[in-house]
Structures are given as C-alpha cells and as structure tokens.
Image (cartoon, rainbow, N blue to C red; front, side, top):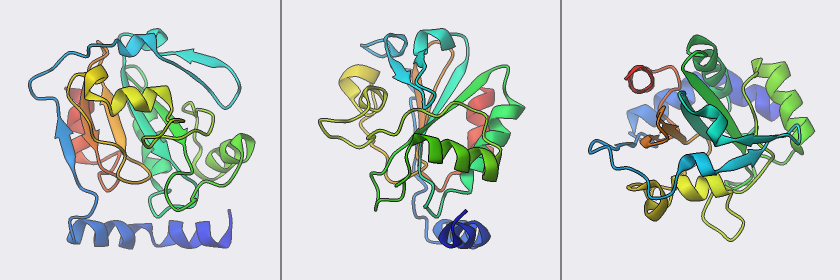
Length: 196
C-alpha cells in the first residue's frame, strides 16, 4: 500500500462523514415499476483479470452487484465492505469489481497489481474484471454500456458519478438499483435491496 493509500484508508470514516453531511454522492435510483430490459443481461460476458471469461448467464438465480473500482480513491476502503457483503450473502449474491481509471487517474496499476492490492489489503475474493472503461465512450465496457443505457436495461441512464458506483441486477436479470459511491456496501439501503 502506498503512503497515499494508507492516508486514504485512515481517513475514510471522516471522508464518508463529510460526504454524508453535505449529501455528496448519495443518489439512489430504484426500478420501482420493475421495467424489464429490452436486451438480456444474460447475453453479456466479461473477461476477468485472470483472463477467464465470465458469462452473465452463469449467474442466473443470483443477484449481481456491479461496482466500478479504483485503488487510489477516497472510497477505496469500500473494498472491505464489498467483500463483507459478498461473504455474508454468498448464496444469493455475487459482487463483481470493474477496475477503471476514469476518474482523476485513480487506478494506474495493471490487472496483476490491482488484484494483488485488493487481496493483500482488503481480502478481496470476489471476481475482478480486466481494467476497462466504465464511463460513456467508444471503449465503454459492454456491461456498463448495458447498465447505463435505457434502450438496453429498460429504465436507467445514470452513469457512474465516481469510483464505487454500484448497480444491482436481480435474480432474473433485471436492473433494480443504482447506488452512488457514498452509499455503503454494508449500509441499510444496500442490505434492504439485497434482501428483497
């Protein structure tokens, strides 16, 4: 862990307290009408940082939490909460991290470096995708294109507002929630959504 990363980890509780006090990055969007996607989530696949392919169709019957991540961000300590959530609900939920360097170059490492950082510092055992782009662009990861494109997912246009934005897809492949970065992976809003 770099000096910067150690400082960010130490000050994470203050950082989160500040963001909540000023209601920064606290948006939650809900597919309350349960709008169905026009393109199936299960047609998508990703390449993991292990170079293995993961088809979303292999995840049918489980909820899937998709999170854009970064190693040098004020929210990086959320890896710990994501791992806790993954372990607590492993029978019904899979968490997938999407390392991305889209916000102020906060993910500079290669896939091996990112995986090592996550494992050593946060005990991450949930799948990590090869480093990719999650914001709208010609290079946007196809999963994030689906998550942020109403014409495909049925209702949501919200792109990640920063690192550690979270999207929850239910057991039937329907996008049900978007959570901004300040929403804790182990907070009441997330737990309620996972347990629905």
